[in-house]
Image (tube, rainbow, N blue to C red):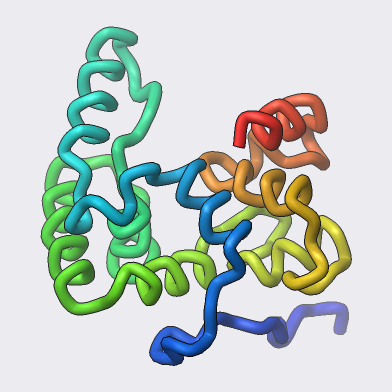
Length: 172
């Protein structure tokens, strides 16, 4: 009846330590979303402080200070409602996640679940939607474009604004 029943896509195995995340994918997302990913324990006080000051100066929510771990907490356990209570829960869950899982496991959960626009949940679906390729076939340019979708998939979508998508890709 022209309805999607299920999507079949490859996912990273969370508990398989032998399965590596491709280098370019790993560091494209880390450079885009959480430069200090390997240095903090789930929350980045420097990033939170910077975002807080920037948002106060601008008078509106200009940027977020969430780490990849905090985004995983929000994706799996919470929602996107902007509230102080949700942020506190997100921080607590992030600390627990960082204690319980390795950085690679957290990154795999993130890459499997992040919404990247056009109905694509996870990097594997995004590689099919945007380029019609398997993950292993993507070029650095294509990986950077997909990583650039993470902050705001509808804004940075190459389908909506190719110039902005390319500008963000080049930044990454």
